[in-house]
Image 1 (cartoon, rainbow, N blue to C red):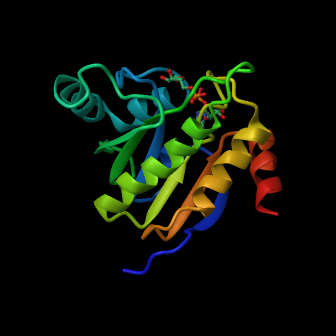
Image 2 (cartoon, rainbow, N blue to C red):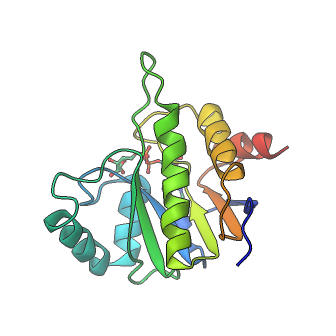
Length: 173
Ligand code: APR
């Protein structure tokens, strides 16, 4: 399979409706659900996702999924085949956590590529409850993905509102 930077596309919409191989979830370290994207994915994907998350907590991730790391489960009832859960950093003015946010994109792509995924949909990780400013999060996301050599063909940023869409569009030039 050929590797290289994936093709980047932007969609204004709901990530749970994307017909892709992998949908990335902006999870928290408990892996047991939440609001925002996390809530939407579990709501639409159904209980099998949470069952697999619980199994991960009972095995490899007894203390939860660390920030910046990624792990896959079934996508349950979603059109996608898998959900890759990743934990974004909470924004901080005092501490530069950019590397952790970039790691979410890189690690999620690595997990997706290992599954043989060719298309991966990302939300704007950390820009909701975790309060990361959209423009900076878009810069980090696009830079991390463009600098990743991967067998994934398409990375689709799925933005939930116009403001987020514009922030990412500005980075794609
Ligand atoms: N599809 C696409 N994007 C969405 C959707 C959706 N269905 N729902 C929300 N978003 C957008 C938000 O508008 C925001 O831009 O996803 C981005 C990330 O927001 P959050 O979901 O709040 O994620 P995050 O900021 O990473 O915070 C994670 O929130 O829901 C809890 O359990 C989760 O504790 C974790 C924290």
